[in-house]
Length: 464
Image 1 (cartoon, one colour):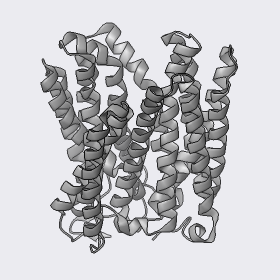
Image 2 (image 1 turned 45 degrees about the vertical axis):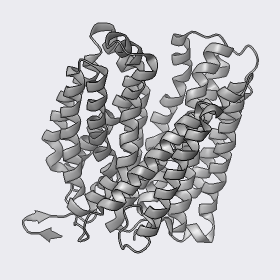
Image 3 (image 1 turned 30 degrees about the vertical axis):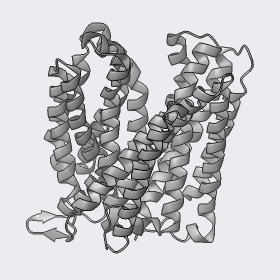
Image 4 (image 1 turned 45 degrees about the horizontal axis):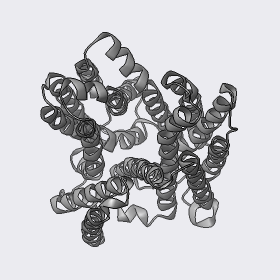
């Protein structure tokens, strides 16, 4: 399709432009994911050098994550209107400038402010990257593209602690952020290969964007405070009440709109709704385990911090290898089948970790981690492919935004549940958390399998 002097490719980009476009996507996603991981490792150093308490320094991480959560859907909606490529390029520029501001910060306040700006840049990148992949790859190879993104995310998450430790061993903490500046410039330089997309005619809904930010923001704050124990119930109740009120108003407003910011139109598609619920449960289970295992390995099994990192490594390594293969399989087999098998394997791995013997060997721990990685890797790419392909092509932005929102919502809930369990359980808290993660994985398996029924299979590989 030709619009003015620009050519819009309706079924994927030609090679080699496709590879350059995926390089742009890969670099942007790597920076956004890696920056969330490396900041955690650097927190003690940042707190010490900026004369901040541990509780205050946590906002270096929280501000970044919170801004991403509340911005994903508005930015994906804006991408439908002004173009996904434009949102992505703006995100790269904002992320680079914000990274430089983080590196130049000389107080906790300025660093947190820079992290807020960096979160906006990351949200621009993450809100439309999946939508762009749908235009980069032909419809018959969409799973392959999604698998590559899953591979990049897994690799960046796995490399985060190592990268952070390496930088901190030879340079000040500021370089953790400064390293993003040249990467942003390289990404912007090759961003001209990103595909052009047909722009929607509706206007951006500013009131819905504000309601979305309030609903998700107060919900995340409420969940976070609930995780700190039952002493904050009054505050939690107020935050949840505001979130529910804003969410109710938001949903009612969206019902009458042809392209709603909160994609209630997509949630009416059975297979899309099932995929979203499956994603929330699976990422909730993943984060329950990720947060619990370091405490379990160090406090219960008395392994060192270095041993803990090495013992958890088989999980992301397995995910790195399995995710691309699962993406290719997703182009041939139903996601309900692949996702159901993946979540069943994931549940077996989590259950095996929950019932480790009292004095396990390193091999006992590693093979269980490997099983978890294989199961989650087999699930993730097919599930993401189904969420994108089941949405109409003109609503790819809404689907992409919901994909990221479901992931972050699940991870936030998982983290809060771990904190709540640790606060309430006087003993065996780690085992209870891992058993809870196993239960969530089994729920995700059931939800994924429901997509094989008539309600889901009719749209399983559809391209609206």
